[in-house]
Length: 94
Image (cartoon, helix red, strand yellow):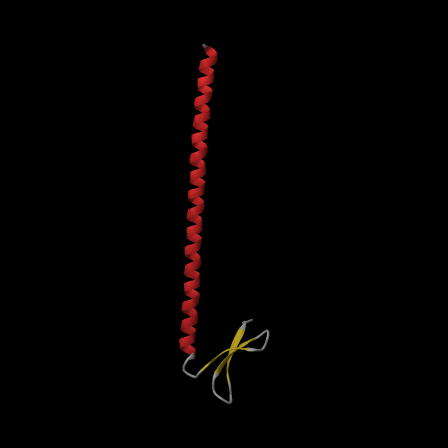
């Protein structure tokens, strides 16, 4: 079921966008403005989707770099521990 419907006022001939649930007028349009407003609403929605995609890409990139940094750090720590273990082993055998 649609959230809103567009009806034509019989008195003033304006188009009214009415919320179905609350039965209140959300917007009103002059006779020729309805197409322009629809295009503007579509453009705003498209911009929101594009912005959301960009933010998601940025978050993913940040998370990926964080994981890579953590992996590099762990690899360095493991190499250091391996080096220390070899030094201790060589020290014990002498």
